[in-house]
Image (cartoon, rainbow, N blue to C red; front, side):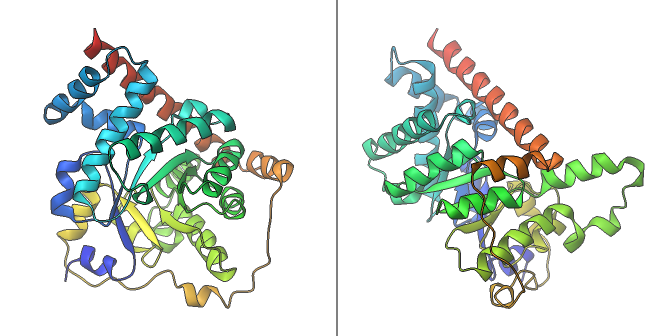
Length: 317
């Protein structure tokens, strides 16, 4: 048995890519996308026709509307390949505007509906800011499932649980990156790997809390730098993994032991925690890593959204 098959015995495997041509060989259950992944994919020659198609079929549409149509086209193609769900992201430039996020999310769902897609297979990705979480709360009440991303801290996860979102994507690799950079020459890779990895520990704390208190929100570890981080989270509800790391797992023989155990989490001595807006903002502000990585992630996704619109503009010219 290879490690990918072993992992699938404990965890739902999700492909983190916009390259739907790769998905057939990897056979994930679900797939996730973001502006950076769509931008990377659309610059490949095999996707040039799809970019042209979106522009030609929507003459005169504003750039943000074209971008949403391109995102949905990728989502449609992905859903032809995976048996489960696809996550499509709201423009990160709206991360601090609840109403604008609601409007944009509903527009994405309407586009999927117009394309004949069963929207139960679509998760709307939103940055886990306070405003994004409140938008997700309202969307869930309207029957639209959400995936809260750029999640780096326990308070973000708890606020998402209180909002009854469908799924959260706590990041691993970017947390690891931050602590490694802070430690500099003092960083001990061996001592900070596997279950001792700070990103892994963050996801485990969230997973244990959710399972202990019976939270229905799914936990999907995201943003991995190496296979060790993935294996240390075997048993998490879902893990979204890049094609390169999926291939490494598929090419490595060996069993995968359970690392996160929902039954065991139920017996842990944990106290309930909740965050109103003031407590959420203070707790996030008090966490330098989460504050910096959330801001950095929003900036990066926003910049790639602009670049995507520039490609669409060039195609329309």
